Image 1: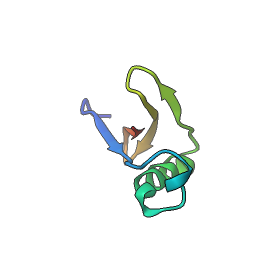
Image 2: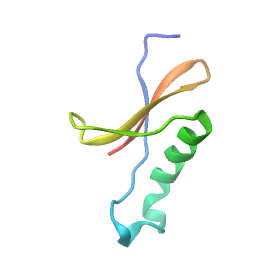
Image 3: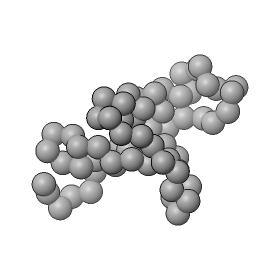
Length: 66
């Protein structure tokens, strides 16, 4: 494992208005990566975002939903 910090930010809009629109394509992408890795997002107050860490190509990658 390397010392670099890797992150993927999945951008989207909260709320029912955007739930099924392409405004949330970034959320859907990181949700699928997390699902395939068998991990779940958790809210981190200090970042005001949902985050999780997944192994990807030999490195740990943070997934972020701001």
